[in-house]
Length: 327
Image (tube, rainbow, N blue to C red; front, side, top):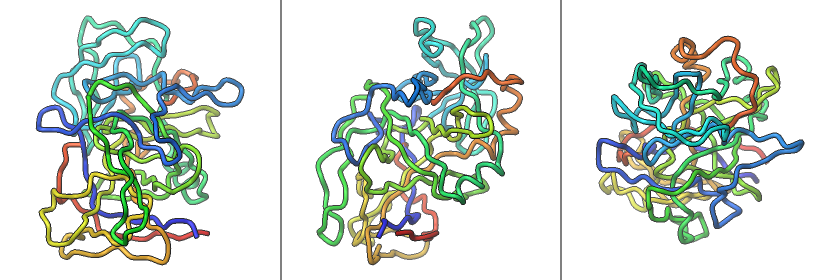
C-alpha cells in the first residue's frame, strides 16, 4: 500500500522580522546529503533553478523585468534580492519595495534607478489545467528551498522507523532541491495551497523544513511546453509526540510515517493511526489562483524560457482530512 496523505498542523517557518529558525535544504527521502547541483533533464533542459535569487536567508523568484515574489511571512516592506539573471550576469543586489500582498504571497518591485532583470520565470496561469493535472495525478514538480539538512533518523509514535529530525541551521547555505507530486489543493482563510506529500519513494522525493519559505515549486506546462512557476513555499505539516502539550512544542522532523504521533484539530487532540504509513506534506501558495495579483507585473507575452525556479507558529491548525489512498 502507498502511504496515506493527510493534513495535520501546519507550521510556517522562517521570518526576517521575528525570532526565526531559517535553515538549509529540501529534505530528500533517498539521499542523506543535499542536492545542491542544478538538475539537468533529458536533452539538456534545466527545469529552472537558475531563475531563483536569494533574499536574506530565504529565496525570491523574478517574474518580470521589474518584479519578484516571495512568501509574505518572510518579507519586510523593503528588501533586496541577489540575482544573476539565470547565470547570464554577475550576481548583483536589487533594492526593492513591497507593492502587493495576497495571503502568503508578496510581490516586490525594483526601486527607481535599479536595472531591469533580463531573465525571469514564466508563471502558470491556468486554474483549469492545474486542476485537471492534479485530478489525473500527473502534476509532478521540482521543489526548491534553503531549509534544513536531514538529521538523525527518528521513530514514529509506534516505535517504527518514521523519518528524520531537522538538522541545524547556518543561514548561509546554498539552494537545494527535491521532487514531488501535487496531491491536492487545500484552503485556509480564503487562500489555496498546493499539497505535496512526502511519500517514501526511491529517488528525490522531498519535503520542506524550517527555512524553505519563499522557495519555489515548478511544473511542466504541456500547453506552453515549458517549466513554469506554480507555487511559492508556505508551510509544512507538523505533529506532536504526545497530546496536551503546548502547541509550539511540535516535533521538528520530516515524517514519511507519522503514525502514533498526535495533532490538534482546533478542538481536540487526535492520534494518527492507519493500516499503512501516514505521511506529512509540504504546502505552497497556488499561483494560478493568485494570477490576478501577479498579472500587472508580468510582461505579455512572457519570455519562452525554460525555468524552475518557516516563523515557527505553533497552533495554526487545519482540520485533518484524508483525500484518497492508492496502491
